[in-house]
Amino acid sequence: MNRFSKAILVLCMVVGTVITAHTQGSQLAATPPMGWNSWNHFDAKIDDATIRAQADAMVSSGMRDAGYVYINIDDGWGGKRAASGKTRANEKFPDMKALADYIHSKGLKLGIYSSPGPAGTPACSEFESSFGHEEEDARVFAEWGVDFLKYDLCGLQDDMAKAATPEDAQKVMADAYRMMQLAIKKTGRPMVFSLCQYGIASIWKWGVSVGGNMWRTTGDVEDKYTRMAELGFGQAGLARYAGPGHWNDPDMLEVGNGGMTTEEYRTQMSLWSLLAAPLIAGNDLTKMSPDTYALLTNREVIAIDQDPAGIQGDRLRTEGPFEIWVKPLADGSKAVGLFNRQDDFIKSGEIDLNLAELGLGEAVQVRDLWKGKDLGLAHGTLKSEVPAHGVVLLRVYPVKASR
Image 1 (spheres, rainbow, N blue to C red):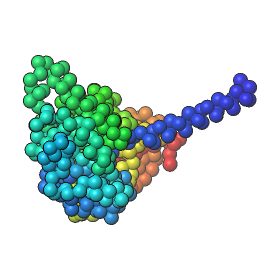
Image 2 (image 1 turned 45 degrees about the vertical axis):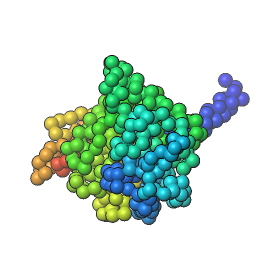
Image 3 (image 1 turned 90 degrees about the vertical axis):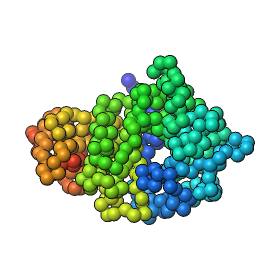
Image 4 (image 1 turned 180 degrees about the vertical axis):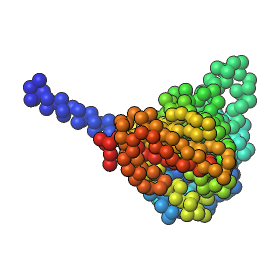
């Protein structure tokens, strides 16, 4: 190959790299969405003032600067349709467009909630659903300035129950979600499409085919360690279905709602980050404790979740109550979570990590992400003392690519 041909080849490689980078950067939900949702803390007891206060707190607390950008209004906003069929908010939200403008003025994005139940079927809390009004509702959402739609399964269960086979029931769901995705696309406004479908019929296998950017792989999370652990550790084996633009969603964060200990909340934040799960906070942002703030805004932990390679982590192995989870990262390092699931709160447990299992070479550099501390060069077996219901979260670098 002559010098001219080599030059052309290099130029093509550079242009291709630039185009690829631009495509990834402009892709909707290129990394797992981060934000806040009203449901876990406020249920349907929400109004315009509450949402504005949460938006204000997201900015003033520094959460926006840490990556949280979506303010998602869950169930409780909807009212009766106009005679024309146009969707309307209830009296607690007198001007949804003004609310959206306010949120956008803060450098944030607005999310909203609906469901695909058949016409006349209410959503979870008795408000109107979108089935049969997909284009009208999507158009209104776009006019308001909505950036994220959580589309719940509420109202569709009766039609699914009438289906002759499981395959027919899946088709009922898929068709309903596809109709709304097409309606969103028709508006021309980008909206993250979140399928709140509880993991029924292995949605991770077909969620992307109906335009989902994220899909629930589980039932609802609760502010209890047992339920959170059931959902989070139950994600083993689903990594191949996630990636840039389409994410497995084990439901929202409970960090700061008071039902778990700091160690247990640290476990959720660590596990969700290893899973490349959407990080959607569900606490009252106006009343965060220092511990809650520190858990939600640890930049090194968030970087694991938001890693541009978009690879979901998976379980490496278990040993009794101990589990080791690993997530490959774009720079060649790996995030490693050492989890102690034993129920005895008095005791901690020693977890042995055979570093050779990571495939990074005989010697590695190790950093503890929650302590923010370099542990130095390591080889052989790394022993870590992990509290019950707790975690040690590490970032492990091959020596040749150490920082």
